[in-house]
Length: 291
Image (tube, rainbow, N blue to C red; front, side, top):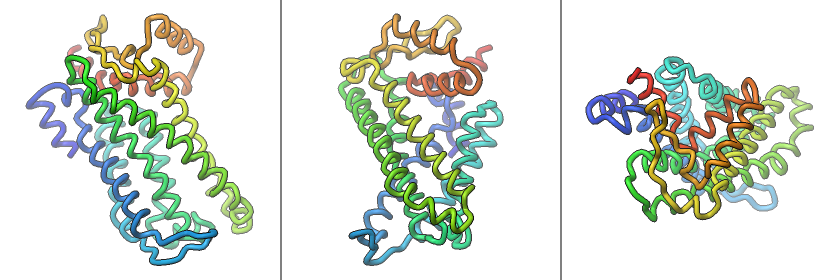
């Protein structure tokens, strides 16, 4: 799919010439989120008073979904991250691989779950339901590149994204407080403190970033969410989508002053996050080609 995206970009030009990995990325988030929801709905049995009853079969997740996802992350590192020197996405992919690959095998899942294979597999599956928001974000990126005028569907997509990001915040807060935190003593007893620490940190960071993204999406208010504005070309020939969710020039200046106050990794994360929301994250490639 990555090479298919490259061919499409070379053959038909924009918008896919600026983001050839669009097809692989969209297939990955769509497939994993669908499989996660399917397994949770039909293969996870029934939970009542903390006791699981009925058939529990996570083989589809462990034998198909996770290998697909890990394969995508590893491929994307070499095809996109390293050539483009995108260290933040590289870090994200590596963390995802480290966090989820143990679930594929019984021995690894036994250690990662402090003896509870089904629970840690369930945790992996539930976490991947958040990929639904990535599907919506990718579609939003496509609309930002191709729409010529306001369209009601754009507002519906934006509102759906806001709902999905809010759901992510609630989801990861729930997992941390009601699922992971009560198991601290079990992980200490089984001497899996490092595993537990990585689990806590990962869920906390993802939840915090989800809250940050939600704030970005809502910054322009309801009008900014439901109204599409034609992208304005920047001085260097690339596109800037700073006003796509209703931010005015004063808010842009405020964001620039905040960026100036930031430093190191924090500044890079904020810049990439804003670029993704603005739809301009993948335009640097086009800019480089023009130069």
